[in-house]
Length: 221
Length: 239
Image (cartoon, each protein chain N blue to C red):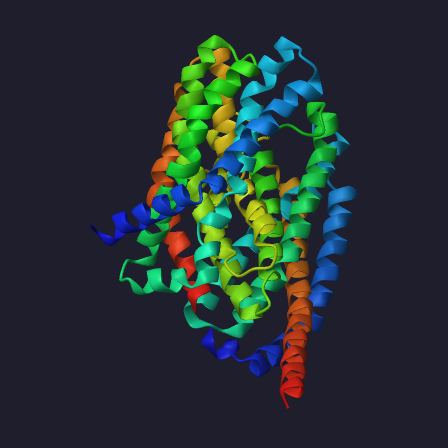
């Protein structure tokens, strides 16, 4: 097994054995989304109007809570030094970590989001586009999250700090994703917004691991 | 450049330049504001509100130039590990955040009479707001570590990552349909602005950049003194 796959397999095994970690992130996603109908009152039109934004913003916030799994735990128990010594380039290590993070956070959210969308009364035409935006957008969240998490290894109050750093970088994702879902609900073409999301993903796959690798190198010095 | 990575040599030059730069700043602001507010024609469509431009546009230029110099200082800190480069990046961040805030606020004051709204979520305004958040994230990150060197290195990487935002700001008005008007000074086919308006604009831009220089030197001095103080305290505590 190549080191790259081994890192992914190890993180997936860790995630399975500490299953509550993932469950908590997803529970946060579900609970916060269901707070909106309670807070706004059950007005179907209003809920349908804000559903894309609620789902995406909550998904981003839930992801912020999960970034400490990327490097912080490994840095605390010394595992990060071992991984750095394994011979796997740090940028590929960051890419493997981001892959494992997406498989344990982004993918479950992708499955949950359409179910939650039903409770928010999302327009029927929007479901495919909702899943498409999440499929293109959540990997970028994991990749940018890896950059942020690598930057804050060893920082005070790293959890808040990583959100402060990563959320501004994710604003374009939020804008294009929500515009695509709203365009679908209004019967307008969604292609441009999805292409933008795809372009950001295509740029983030090679570039974000390089930045995360550079940040890890500074953290390990 | 490496010659001036030596703090003693750098501050000898900076202290000599500072009074001159201070006089230049005051002179440019005085002449620039005179032309901008009193001795330049009102716009044929916008009337006197066009005078907000002379405060707004140079602030936005300075905000971006400040981020670019912060990213360059961060890069040279990562590559050559000059302490002064780290301090320069740290010094530039709050100044740039201030310029960004000025351009956002004056833009909002200009938008109200011209577009009928204080704020729109279009590409130019949003990308400048992201620039402001990047400055805040940088300031929070560099101060979040007990070891200032570690904070400086993390901040340098973040500054470089955030530099992708600069071309997005510059070209946002060309790539998207926005309320914000397209570039009228830095264009391939020459400035599309009347010369009697271009003069005060350039004077104000010079004033902002000179002010940036003055504040950089003052902040660098303070940060360097703080760093020295920390070293002396640590040395005293370990004795």
